Image (cartoon, helix red, strand yellow):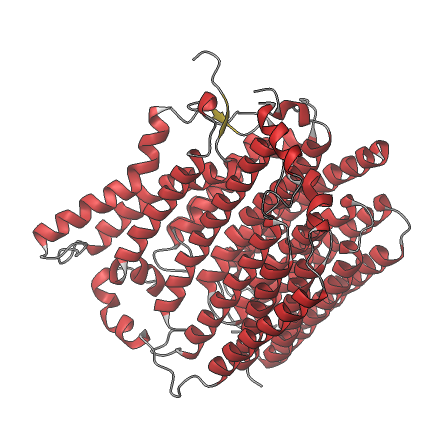
Length: 116
Length: 99
Length: 314
Length: 97
């Protein structure tokens, strides 16, 4: 098994783990973590493709590598926005649940919002 | 590019350091306290940088030192955030409501 | 020999990923996410993507970890309620099957990639001379695919707008984040006095090295942003109020210079973002130098979140 | 000359490895947070130091060697500070609980 195959399988497994975590974990922050796992799996797949494209004295195809750098920075921005949304929602309503409002202790959430 | 024997030695050492870091990570992440878990970043800050330098030198990537420099500066940042976040969640919560 | 290390990195990476997915406590999950990011740096290095390794070391291991930890601590009060919502066995089995199916499809695709692999490396090698830079990735980022980089800088700016739009009305124009109170003898204050000068030099060095070696504006900007955040976390300097004019100017400086030079290229070289002959290197340096402070400020503002404290009196 | 440098590298690597093993053993065996922190920050820093010293003869360029030393100094500076921060956090948690 060579490096490309190894990291190819790792990338696929990372995406799988991320999908599982995204569905199963109820906390929104955990979903952001899981989403990051999926993203890293895709990045790793991209890096594998770049690695296979080594030619002309370069250690890899520079175009997917450059895209990866862009992608890592953008995914950080996306995570930051998601975290901002979560914290704001928590500050406003006192909950961070994704369940439908009537399922997740409706009274508590409303009183919290009214208190402000 | 370092020659064969030394490269092999470096890779072997790198593997063992990684193994030690992995074992250490296992015990640190299990806890029991939050302070124990904070050590995870610290553990990788030293062991991870050693492994990085070893594998980079063995495969002849000169710029690996720059990656190590970045990590050395930023490994502390994650740990500080850890401690600060912990401090805020326990002590400074009243600040949050001060608005 | 190198493949033995790769196997170790792959296994450890998956083990940490599994930890972040299955462990009950969110704080523990995030604690596992930081070494995971550092390990990913090793993976990029083994795949010979040194530029990507640098970016991951800066963003993945540094900023993302700090961002998530802060959120995990802040959201700790919701933890018990959230855990009660964990779906039952049936959902978990279905989710597991779905996830496995996705993973298998991707694995099969990745194992059956076409041979020989398609690559743009020879194309880049043929034209890199014209850009005047030695690092092919910088050439791609700022010349061949400059539009991607421009749009990325603008996306980051939108990210800041998005985060700012979460501010409560009464706090608008104030300072982001919480007030930090730290004693003058705190070791954190010492670290925040000693490390940033060194860190800023390293950040600028990595930015400058990016012309010919791995490095560049993203990585340099991240290091500088982290140093500023360290100073803020120590309480030595407060976060700037978001209504400051200099802050807005620095934020848009990079994208504005980028667009202006792009339009100038449309006039002088016949296409948007085209560089006139012989001027490519200079234009790339000007764009990168303008982007560096913008990116650093953008990353800091994304990290500290929306304004939370109304400004008392200016 | 070349062999002497290589022997030096191997000896230093073994030393570094010893400290990494010692650090991990400490993490596994020590009874409380403070002693574990002690094992981690002291032993692993020395381990990294020995690895850096061992890599010096293999660095192709003087600048690379200097940067290696800077990496080690930075890690020593930051990890000593961070270990103190973590120890304080641990004490605060003990008091709190």
